[in-house]
Image (tube, rainbow, N blue to C red; front, side, top):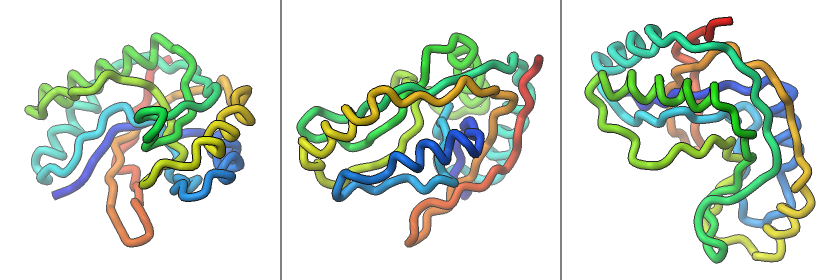
Length: 180
């Protein structure tokens, strides 16, 4: 079994800017700089044969390159019990188009469709326990003008994820170029 997801790698400068915001929320588990990415489709644990089919299906995708920008932060979960803090992605039709093509390729390989609506974002922290509301609100207010980009998106990546005691380790298994 191999645990996979499809995502977009971020430029080093963007990852550094996001990582520099980490802190100020006790109990937050901050995503390590090297793991910051945008997930297009989580696949999960599948056997090696199906993983090869998925890789081949993704290789057949034709989509244009585009520019993307991050702007501000938000949370998933309820106001009383947020479970993730994330950087928002400015609306970009080419990103939505690419995500739809990735979803279609994965479903054609026999995997079930994604049940959740696609909300493009970069997860920067997770919460086991709800953070002190004042601390989270202070963070959101302090970083409400955060902006990174636009930056070019010229490829998407099939990642494997290996869970360890120290957190997840992501490996780029294949990169797929986007057209001009």
